[in-house]
Length: 182
Ligand SMILES: *[C@@H]1O[C@H](CO)[C@@H](O)[C@H](O)[C@H]1NC(C)=O
Image (cartoon, rainbow, N blue to C red; front, side, top):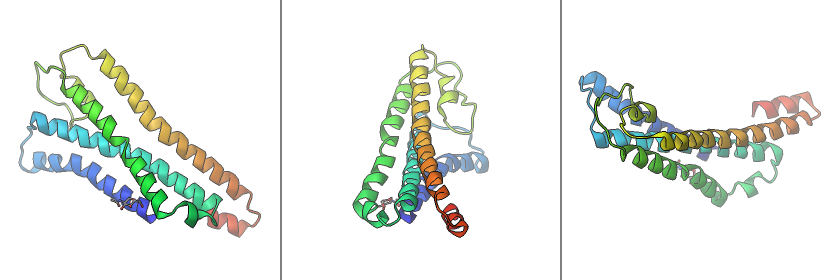
């Protein structure tokens, strides 16, 4: 659990740093500009850390499921190799999602206003500055977002349903309490 928590902290630091670093610059130096490349970089890492975090949360839910539903097998199932594989599998989806999203959006022509109406280069405020036909990209972005949110969400729900079912089977109230607090 702690190695996944360390992963989560790491992703969370990255995710916040991507936003806050530029925001502090904006607030302290009153420099409200961001370069084209800076904007793309910020969007890339924003999506990368965000997506990886969603999948890492699903991995952590699976870790809890194994710990509670097969406590005696836990050290065997969650050995170092499995943990490394799960951590890699959580981080990996961030790469293709961030790469496709950022390269596709930033390959559109930009014209007219160049004001990003947001505190970071998120996809919707940047999309508003594009002057081209973007319907296909929007469909891709919506489907991508639904998948990235729904897949981990369903896995987490599954894990917690199984955990709740296992806990309700524990006969002793004290045992139930201990399992729930875990
Ligand atoms: C993430 O978890 C894996 C698997 O336990 C571990 O090997 C790796 O060092 C962790 N990474 C970070 C940045 O904590």
